[in-house]
Image (cartoon, rainbow, N blue to C red; front, side, top):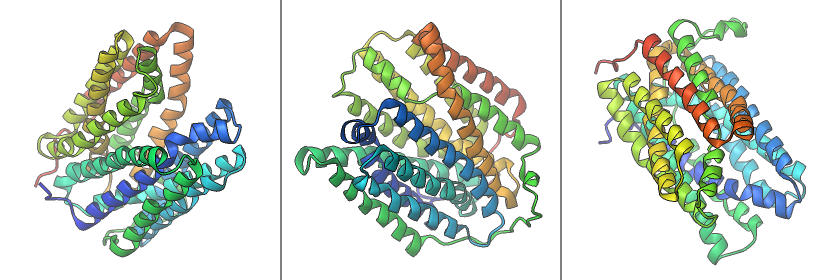
Amino acid sequence: MFRGITGNVLILGIVSFLTDVSSEMIYPLLPLFLTTVLGGGPAFLGIIEGVAESTASFLKLFSGIVSDRVKNRQRLVFWGYTLSSVARPLMAVATAPWAVLLIRFSDRIGKGIRTSPRDALIADSVDPSLRGKAFGFHRSMDHAGAVVGPLIATFLLAYVTKDLRTVFWLAAIPGLLAVLMIVLRVRDVARARKESDGRFLQAVPKGNLKTYLLILFLFTLGNSSDAFLLLKAGQLGVTPARIPLLWTFFHVIKMTSSMPFGALSDRIGRRGIILSGWGIYVLTYLGFALAVTELQVWLLFAFYGLFYGLTEGVEKALLMDIAPTNERGTAFGWYNFAIGAGALPASLLFGFVWQLAGAGAAFTFGASLAAVAALLMFFFIKTANPPVR
């Protein structure tokens, strides 16, 4: 069961778990804190999240390129996690909306620095025939943190304190434990480094890798923020008290499905698993376009969780099957950039279609883009078989 879960893979999984516990103790409370405590409005919340995610997307690209050219990826991972773990709890001392913007900006800088080098380090640390399992395990641990973090915050607010700032301070504990784990247990792996010629454009993907990333970008254009699914859930009768339960249920499905499907991709091939996930996405969005009851919402969220389990880790494993050995960090940089660049306009397009033509049209639009991307994947990505053991 644990074959392929090497020391680095295990520790980086635990690090992601602890970091997500810390992050998810704060993030779900942030809109409430910003609007009711600091007096910020929805528009400023949108500015904060837009700036934060844009920053992370661009930095993931550059940190990935840099990680192929430096001797030690572990240091980039360490500094990225450290910056986020130190910045995030400072929400507790924020006295104005601009301070929240600065803190979120710093947190996302940390995420941008660490993500691509960390994923490349995972790929370096495991046999190619077990990469799907390794990345699936990492995603499972990440989702486990997303389940535990809000539950801890809920417990603290219900039984320990009503003060949001106290919860934010306590969120520092798992974040600092994650940094300590990196210092004590994560080790770099010997590899062939990419020689730098000083020209950024030499790092632009070519061939099959470029095609794969363009298809991922197209798929992401139809993959809007999950906040729209929660909005639809509320319209169909899921009460505010049950929304956190629905969200936790969703993350449990993601957590329990990521590793099994990742391991399955090691045996039967990556492309078929990804296409199955994208097919489930299409059916889920069409389901949301037609849903009329709360029971249907819960079933659709379960289905949607399987989409993540089938795709998140496996997409990364396929990326590593295609990418040159000495350009793994660069490949992850472009992968994260393509997804980030697609995610920014995706929600704007979805919201515009919803406002103009209704929720059904918006979900159908998202499903249609995903279906086109799946067809392109089927015809143009030919690496259907996993690496030989």
